[in-house]
Structure formats: structure tokens, C-alpha cells
Image (cartoon, rainbow, N blue to C red; front, side, top):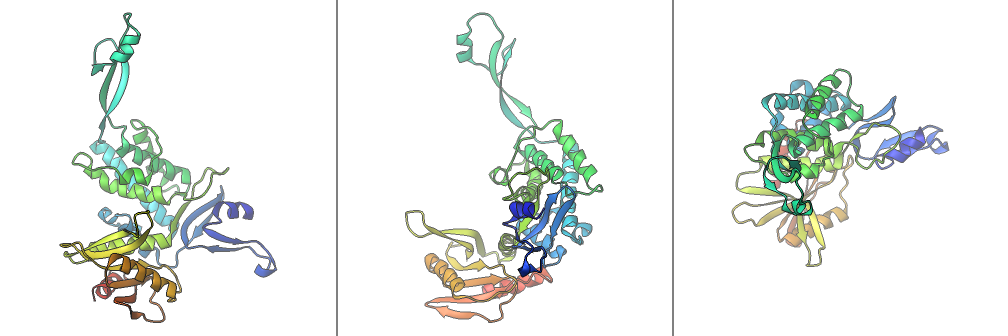
Length: 369
């Protein structure tokens, strides 16, 4: 069992085998991940975060654009990672059922078939190869709900069912939504990138919030875990990535109207393709000029190191701005407010244990100060 855990989750969990060093005990240490890691049909490890589950959900709401779901009190009050997963799965399933009742959106998809009467246009190339009387080979389009908008919902619900992480109180509604879609929509694998590239228009705009929730599941279910003999898939969140996305999304939603934010800003260094990628750059909306750059550092014991300062200074120099900020989930023990050349470098915190909005407002004041 221990060897299986190490092979499947070695990148998410540090597994120390029994030895004199560990007192002849197994020692498991999460490597910055939280979630549910199925090891065997009757054994699932819960990697609990150090922050309250309510605040974890609050981070997810911003990072995955779930604010539009009007967070339910019962869901926000979840006490465990399992509760959180089930709450989100139930929310998706119920909203899918509501969408089915309203009517699924569709698209015109190309088809080719032989017909006794012309439909669409005659496929002359095929017809020329068979000059004798026969049904006419036609090419036409047909309106169908079997399109990406609905395939993404179907595939996400399929992954949730495969995960076996839902209890009997949630499974019925997830199965009902899955069956409702399976009548008209093919089961085709979809990725979060497929949805990110999907254009929205008045006919499918109501799917935007549903797809935001789908992207959360598609990104977080089973990253980096090879297939095995167990049919279950894990649900894992990398807190460093979540913190990075959350900080950028919160600031984007609360910056003054005259200031914009570019998350994951690519900064080319030369024509050969070498580039920096800054976690966030705030800029003047009118001129587009960068005003400052920040880099997030998720660590439970923040210690200021010269490499971090050098990194964010290099970002600022490449962008031509004069303000650089290092953002931690806990305030560093040593304050940082210094000047490197003509660049001001500061350290700030976005604490995750208390009121997230209050912590965000304090960070915003530091950023704009």
C-alpha cells in the first residue's frame, strides 16, 4: 500500500518509509497540495489545508470565477475538503438539470449521408465515382445539442462520478444530471483549455458560469497521476498556484477604475523567445504604461531571501517600472522596504486565515501606497 501511494502521489506527498529515522513508522507530508487522494477502493487520504475550508472556498470563488454562483451558506460552511468537493459537485449537477429543463443550446454541425432527395448540397466528387443510380451523397448541417458547450458538462460530470469522492447524499443528483445529458450529448473528453478558447455569445452566454465551475474540476481532478488498477481519480489543489491566481483575481476585481492588472504577464527579453513571466503587472488603463510588478510566494514560513528580491527587481527593470512587490500569505518576520537602483522593493502579506476581503483591502493599500 505504501509503495502504491509513493508511486501515484510522490509529487504531491513526501512518503517516508518505516526506518530508524521515522521511528519505524510511515511518515506522510503534503508538498503544498490539498484535496483527496484515493489510494485503494477503501482508502482515501484527505490532505487538509492549514487555512479554514471557508476561506479555501473563498479563494476558489475568485480564482475560478465562481463568484456568480452566489455562494450558498451551507457550502461556504463546509468543514472538510470532502464537503467542499461534494458541495461544488452538487451545485454543478443541479445547475445542469436546470439548464436541461430550460433547453440545451446547440450548434449546426456538418454531416454527410446518402439520401433519396437532395439535402444541403450534392457531394459531386463522391457522385462522380458512382455514376449509376444510387442514393445521392449529400453534405449538410444539422442543429444538435451535441456540441462543446454540452460535451464539457457531460465530461465533467463523468469525471466526478469516476472519482468516487461523492457520498450517497450527492451521487443521485450527479447521476441524474449525467443521464439527462447522455440522452443527447456524446461523452467526449474535454479540457479546461478547450473551454478557455470557447467564444460566448447571446445564445450560449448562460453557460459561462457553468463552464467556470467545469474548468475548476477539469483542472483539479487527477493532475499528474498515472493510470492504475483503481478506477478512482484524485481531487488535488496546488495551494501555491491557487494563491497566485486568487491574489491576481482579487486585485483585478478591486483595483481603482483607472488601474488595470495583467496576470501572468510575459516579458520578452530578446527576439529569441527568452522571457520572464511576472505573476502580475498593474498599469495605467489610459496609457497602458506599467506602474509596478508583483510576485507571489506561497510559503508557511516566509523568509526574505536575496534571490526573491533579485527576481522581482529583474521583472521591474525589464518592464521599465519602478515599483516591485513580493506578496506572501503571512507577513515576513523582517519588513522589507528598500530601493535597488531606482526600483522600490517591498514585501506585503495577503493573510488567508481571517477575513479575506479585509486582508485584500490592506494589501491594496500597500500596493497603491
